[in-house]
Length: 73
View (cartoon, rainbow, N blue to C red):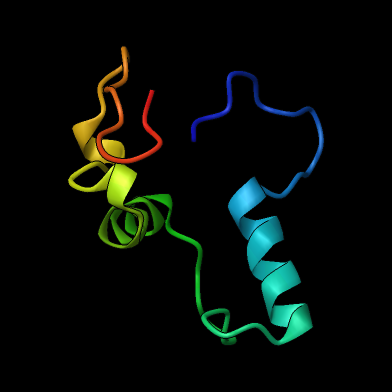
């Protein structure tokens, strides 16, 4: 996710915040040295969640794409 406006102060990206929380809680998949990568996360979601099958950040253009599968609208 690209910020629309850069903050005028030092700020963590949402991925960095989620990584730090996951590491602090000792959650699986947030081992020290792991870095949040939105593209990799979007690919993993596409592999796990049927409605997002075949979808990732790189496959969705600026207009988006409809979801497929159960529960899609």
